[in-house]
Amino acid sequence: MTIPNFKEKLQKYAELIVKIGVNVQPNQPVVLYINVEQQELAHLIVKEAYAAGASEVMVKWSDTFTSRQFLEFANQERLENIPDYLVKEAEYIADNKAARISVISEDPDAFNGLDHNRVSTFQKANGKALNVVRKATQNNDLSWTVVGAAGVKWAEKVFPDLKGDAAVDKLWEEIFKTTRIDQEDPIAAWKKHDETLRTKADWLNKEQFKALHYISPITDITVGLPKNHIWEGAGSYNAAGIEFMANMPTEEVFTAPDARHIDGYVGSTKPLSYAGNIIENMHFEFENGKVTKVTADKGQNILEELIKTDDGATSLGEVSLVPDPSPISQSGITFFNTLFDENASNHMALGAAYPFSIQGGTKMSDEELREHGINISQTHVDFMMGSADMDIDGIKEDGTVIPIFRKGDWA
Image (cartoon, helix red, strand yellow):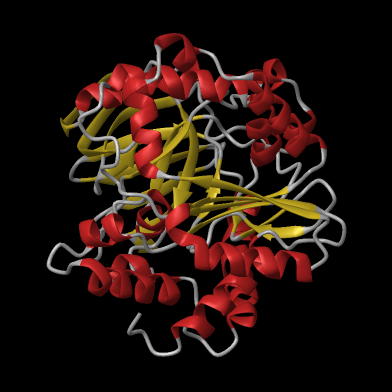
């Protein structure tokens, strides 16, 4: 690494992930999902987690080569059936409210060229079998965070003019910048950022808009909002009232839409990395909350498989507001990674809503959530649709229209 003080910055990053990301508490188990390429960071996170009092740190290593071989050659029965030991492990993580740390560093094209039906079959089976931990995460029953780390293939995709270590160094620099590691006290900087986003969420919660109307040259869509919806920005709270930061970086405030009242069309403004493939220039048409037509210039078959995941995959589970002047947007970099790209642009998510996005939602059954317009699905896939020429209006119960965004920024 040629980055000045790289080891010191990586140490600060590990500390930030443990203390602000999941905010590890004494005697709490921690589970870390990370690629074998990121061993140095993994060891620092493990060390920091134990220093914070973790009872145990379970490291779930992934390896892109192994995953690709499995998806290409495993027999069909195994793709369709997840072994019991993995289901038991998911139950253990949920029951013990383990803090979940997911480090994303994989090649965005990792599964390019594979039979997308096989990939989709496995993803559906996996999503269903591990539903218990997904629900615990979406309910904020436990603390969780998603962060990035610079992998070679990913770095070369983001910076095609650079190769190997040069690309990795450049990507690490951007990760450190967007997660405030380049600031003197990253933890204090995050606390201040948390407060800033919270003021936006507080204003939106006070307004309680009935719907949002998005307009840009490629989008004209009205998205209903459920009664008593809750906007969140930056920090979230788990069931024990402990604050954590679900995404680092984050520049968004978000809530759940009313999945029964979505009408119009929306175009994507950035590529989407999904299931190891890149999907480009998506266009969705909605009527009464459901996708009626979907197209993409690249990866359309993968997109069609995504919306067939289950009934909820044909509607939206999240709407997020991100000002175009946000640092990630202004960097001009397309990261081919939703964690970063969604924080450069207003975005929406196909699939599941977070139950905490409505008052009392975490205590509701799936049926009750649906009755309140909250979407249920085993998938949740964000896509970017904001731009510097997007206007957004909030529509009140009495029909009053209040500007929220003008030309891509807070009005």
